[in-house]
Length: 234
Image 1 (cartoon, one colour):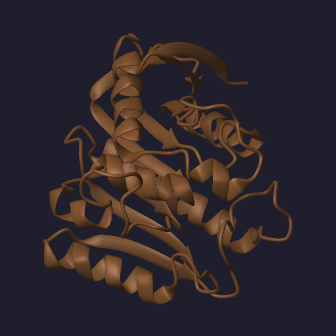
Image 2 (image 1 turned 120 degrees about the vertical axis):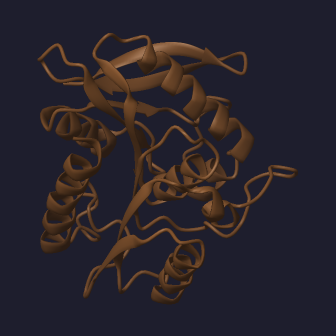
């Protein structure tokens, strides 16, 4: 089971869901950006799975600036890109204090909203050597006024190796959006490995949402994720 560490960011307490391999290390690290469900059962499961695969995994609770809002879109509207970047930087500082972490080998990944914020982090912070994007939507807009370029507009800054997983039945990002994102990476000389799955829609890996979960796509994409991380992080 992962543990919950508490730190302070922007004058507010923030939870970080953390799990690490039993061996001393040092280990590569993966920052897992949460989906709209926050630090829920799905996020905890992915953190656990990453630790079992040999990585120190840490998922920051980016909803910590305001009280939890039950309605999904209202909850998302509380987020601001500058705050999210501050949360990522604080999470990196937190894991860097762990003797188990090899600071040279760090990836960032996320699902849904977390795919978007992972792209935001990879395009803003040079630390990351690998980016895993699971169906990240809303990448072409900034969140909040005066928040800087959108994640899409930051693609030119991404030096990390990139893999992405998408459903062909998804509307956000749609297959057209995915093609546009891939073309933007290609434009800047960053070769990406994108995989799209027929009959799969948004959130196809989220086992807590039976109406969306697509077992074949979920299994194949996770296997490819672990191989990618092993190749890029060791």
